[in-house]
Each structure stands twice: as structure tokens, then as C-alpha cells.
View 1: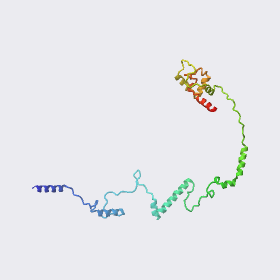
View 2 (view 1 turned 90 degrees about the vertical axis):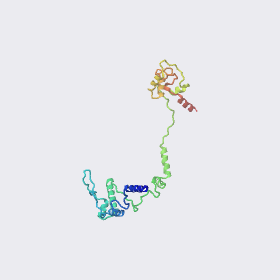
View 3 (view 1 turned 180 degrees about the vertical axis):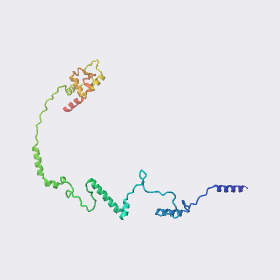
View 4 (view 1 turned 60 degrees about the vertical axis):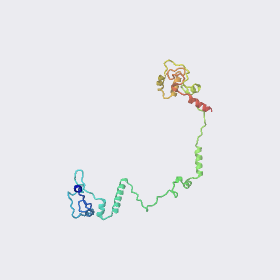
Amino acid sequence: MRAFLIGFSLAGLAACQPAVPDSAAGVGFGNYDSYRQSRETQLQGGTAPGVSIVGPAVSTTPLDATGGAVARTQTPATTATATGDSDAAQLARDTQAALAASNANSGEAPLNASPSNPAPEAVNSLGISRENDFSAVDAQRSIENDAERIARNRAQYEQVAATDLPPRTESGPNIVAYALKTTHPQGKMMHRRGAFASIPRAERNCAKYPSPDLAQSEFLSRGGPERDRLNLDPDGDGYACSWDPRPFRKAAAQAED
């Protein structure tokens, strides 16, 4: 009884499984051989026997934006076929037409590369310019001619005798002389300042001058270094707006050496 029930269950499961189609069958054909034969016939431009196309035929005519048919232009390959020429002959004619159009736009004839074209003319047998060819230069002038030309140029020179520089005239104070006269460093108080002297005020006043040299010259011309009417030297070292006398002292020391 138990064996009978197991066999009955297996038979029921087999009946529930879907049938597997024959793998030899093609798509819409009895077998794969007939499908392949039909496909090869279609690719060769024929129609497979016993096969009908269902549905409307697809037009190969291009459409414009409004849906109307666009007139086709004959391609070079079609023209070549119609005239009986090969594709190479048609390509050659198209190339000549393009070159002619380019010549019309540029105004210059195109240069056709060909082994029969003559070689370009060299300047000389060595292929260098006349300015760098010693033989060509020697034919035009000699060393003696160059010497005469140099002598003529030297005869036109005018030698001016050296004279002393004129004395330097200055209307204002000489900051170089002041730098060489002083020896104390920056920040060392040498002159008393009033109660209104302050660093923030001096910074605002110094910002009006393009350089510390101009500020120092103005400072000396207005009573400095003893007096600071413009409030440019709040620490009383005699140097306005952080003016530094050391470069002038260094230059004078190197000149003496």
C-alpha cells in the first residue's frame, strides 16, 4: 500500500510540470534548419518560401519636421554605379571638385604632390644663405675692406675729456650728511619731546609722505632734530617716520675701503 501511494504521488508531480519544447525547433518554424534557410534567403534579398510578413510595410523614405517626405539626393556611390565608374574614380572626381572649390576661395592653386615635381632650388650647393656662406661674403668684400671701414668709423668717434662734476646745490637739508654726522642707533632718545607726542599720531602724520627719506627731509627743514613741530619723531631719536641712517653709513664705509 505504501509503495502504491509513493508511485501515485510521483505520477502526479510529473503531470504538473510544463512541457519543454523541442530545442531543435526555431522561432516560428518547425526546426532550426528551416529558420536558418529562411534567414539566409532574407539576407540575400529574397523571400523565404512559406513565410508571410504580418503588419504594414515600413517605409524607408526620410521625413522632414512636418511629416512630409524628403527628396533624396544621389550619393557618390549611386552616381558611380549609374555612370558605370568605380568607387575610386568617383572619389578622385570628388577630390578634384573639393580642391577646385578651395582654390576658388583662397585664390591660390593647390600644390599637387607628385614625384615628378622639380626639387626646390637651393640658395647654393651647400643649402645655406649668402650671409652665412664664406665664399659669397669673400666675393663681396675682403678683410682689407672691413679694416678700412672700421678705420673710417673710428675716425668719426669724438672723445670727450672727463671733467669734474658740478657742485651739488640743494635747497633743503641733506639727509646723507645728517646720517654720516650721527652715530646713535634708532630708538635711542636724543631730544626731548612734548606731552602731545604719541606714536599713533606720528603714524597718521607719516602716512602722508611717500617715503621715509622725504619725511626725514621735511622733519629736518622744520626744526629737527631738536624740535618736532610735525610730530614725526615721537621717541626723540632724531629719525622721522622710522627713517634708517645705516644704509648711508654703510655705503660711506665701503667707499673708504
